[in-house]
Amino acid sequence: MEKPWRIAGINFDHMHMGELLNLAAEHPHAEVVGVCDDRPERMRPVAEKLKLPAERIFTDYRACLEKTKPNLVVLCPATARHGEWTEKVAPYGVHIFMEKPFAATLAEADRMIAAVAATGQQLVINWPLRWYPCHVTAKRLVDEGAIGELIEVHYYDGNCGLLKHVTADVSGVEWGTSPDGGAPGQAQAGATRADVLASLPPGLRWFYRRREGGGSLLDYLGYGVTLGTWFMNSRTPLEVTTVIEPPRPGLEVDEHSITVARYETGLSKFETRWGTFNSPWEAQPQPKCGFVLVGRKGTISSYDYEPTIRLQDEAHRAGRDIPVDQLQPPEQNPIQYVLHCLENQRPIEGPLSPKIARIGQQIVESAVQSAAQQRTVPLAR
Image (cartoon, rainbow, N blue to C red):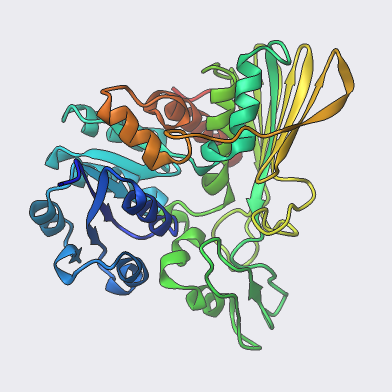
């Protein structure tokens, strides 16, 4: 029987493409009908794993769309090219699933919304943290009133960084293992920083290029402020203050940022870091990666990958550990959820919706402006 959801993956800039296509291939109602990238070597591991025949592998996105006729396209371009790729693909009348972040700028996010709205299809912005059982459990407890009105969100997240250690002369530079299992490497003694960046796999170099939307702020702040908006039921801040650590010599982008957002209920803090002691998918660093939520009647700590969250309330002021919820279909992963919504003609909700993600993008835009101007700015509109 032909499966109703024909899914294509286009542009492999982001390392998450392989995982997303694996989820699509595993879904009983979906089929991966094509993959496309202008660098065939970037598609090869995924194509081999999924056993895709040659006629489903493309280097021209137009040929991919015209020949495979997908109804959902997964896009994983560099951050600064999200608008461009959405506008390229939307005219083919497909639903668009964009891997995080939303965009590099608010104007670009609005272009994406307009391009997809014109076709009558749905735009999805995937935030992998949305599928962590700990954060889903935290959201449930907030909605149930376990800590009263939510008044503060504290977020810290990041990873070791692709360039884990850069010494003064760049001798013995190391970078950590990538989340998709890429092998670590080491630069030759006496190499320049340009040599080190050039030594990164081509698909990862854009993370360190300003014009392509690189840097820890654009990589991680969207997670914090978009899920923060979800936790706060779409509340928006009044103003934003952001400080970034200036890029180290030889680098173009930030590796550490701190954003303070002032809401009517008080201050919330969002911190991004490339250069944590550990990457959280290997072992939690200190500070731990994740969220602390402060309500009027209690607090919740929800840390990435952990099997419990900690709740403080009036009955347990010292706190107690609560096992995370066991996620059930169609809430186990983004492909399950999105196809369920599409099959049942339901709108995309929560962090994956343009409505919530746009508020997150407003905060990111304000953060970029604040860091550049070195002052507090009102929320971008």
